[in-house]
Amino acid sequence: MVVRREKKVRKQRGSRTYGWGTVGQHRKAGTRGGFGNAGLHKHKWSWTVKYAKDHFGKHGFVNPTSKIVRWINVGSLISLIKGRENELEKDEKGRIIIDLNKMGYDKLLGSGKIDIPLLVKVKQVSEIAKEKIISKGGEVIIAQ
Image (cartoon, rainbow, N blue to C red):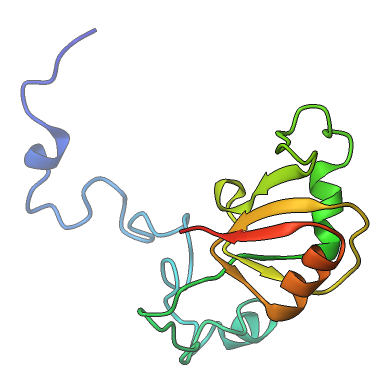
């Protein structure tokens, strides 16, 4: 293969059309009507209305100091231990130990029912959840 001594661009400097003829000048292919998002507020407006409704305008505010709290209900604790009773740790009273901190939960809420005594370790707990667990012979340990 022959190596060009000069690039084609350098050879055609000053030629106006750069070898693309007098009519089209290399304009017949590619994205027509602007590249990317050009024209969305002008000649591509009907496309914008149909496919990109939320492109323009402000879209809410994210508070940089807010913290996402991952929570779980008392009724969902059974689904965490179902089928894994033999693998999980038990304390001296025979209660299954559930460490919600290690599972990625921050707070225990009180919706649902519980049937077995559990020992639950969690950062935060609601009063209702605490009452439900204690009433079934369980215990809640608040651990950071």
